[in-house]
Length: 417
RNA sequence: GGGGAGGUUCCCGAGCGGUCAAAGGGAGCAGACUGUAAAUCUGCCGGCGAAGCCUUCGGAGGUUCGAGUCCUCCCCUCCCCA
Image (tube, rainbow, N blue to C red; front, top):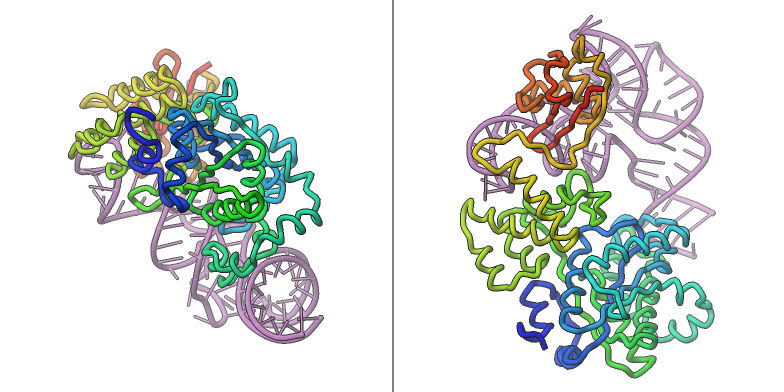
């Protein structure tokens, strides 16, 4: 139904598909006409980060193919805390926090998915999970689950056999997620759920439950876990997650994150995180040696444009060009470089370099600042600081501003006032 | 309820009563090499500092000239039995 072919093939070619439930022909047929498909998001943070981009982009593709994305916010499941992580950190969240996080999530998704006129909807499972009655739930839903079968599921078996074991809440989590699917089938006609590969068990359970309750065939698709070529989970940097919220991760930093992609990941990421045609993706991915940077620049520009708008993406690209563009560093500074104001009077006498680097936050302690300088990684106006106790005086200021840099990429501006 | 194992610096993990700010690895930071990549190599990696000092090894006490290392109690985690 799109020129490029069947949506399922598109998703598969672009690397979105890990597993699909049988029969696959059923999914194809389902997606031959407009359908509703849902993905759950945890409202545990006020912002989504790039780790959620695979599910988000899959919704973008679905919507472009004429389907209706249903975004499920796990407000109800969030109330008990998702235990599927390795450390069982039970985040206790109030309904208010969840509500506000859900609103934030929706705001971000609106950049990717069109929610107007019911073309996509957002639902919160707190609305149906909270009112559930335990006895009724056991009677109607609990009886449909075979403990034997659940224990055989990979997700549970490994935990079951592990040192930590498996607690009752974790064991029940699957039922709640399955119930979500059943509910969304009934209320929204969802017949496809997608999710991370860790959700496979839950998705299959939901398909089963819906079949047993309603006699309806529904389907599931899981995404592969995206890791970087060096094996790390994608989306984490030294400073933590790369957020989609521009207040948490600036468009410039977001762009930088993508430009710094490992060469080996460039093609795969272009397919997943941009909407360029595959032919172009293949061409860019085929570039060799230093020319692969071109592919990464395109990746960064396109990915940033989707998340923050084309104008912000171009501004970030231009700033990066000034900083890293020519043969020589042109003395540029990132557009959102942190800045602070210090009294000009202090610089009459001069401020010791290590002290200054520490005070503006480029080093966490005075000792770290000393080490930074000793290691040759501290720069004032582009020139390395030679000695720990060098004094920086007002003569270093250009137009009242001193540019400090730690390493290659971290800047801080000091304005003399 | 009974029995056992264990809680060490960001993570994993070693740690004879003194030579432990605490091995090793990972992560991280900086430098070199590069291409704002990867790999590799080098240095750093609790705080303040010139030496030295100060605060850390689940918590609280205690023994000792001296405790991460021994004792007591408490808290927490895991395993086995009931």
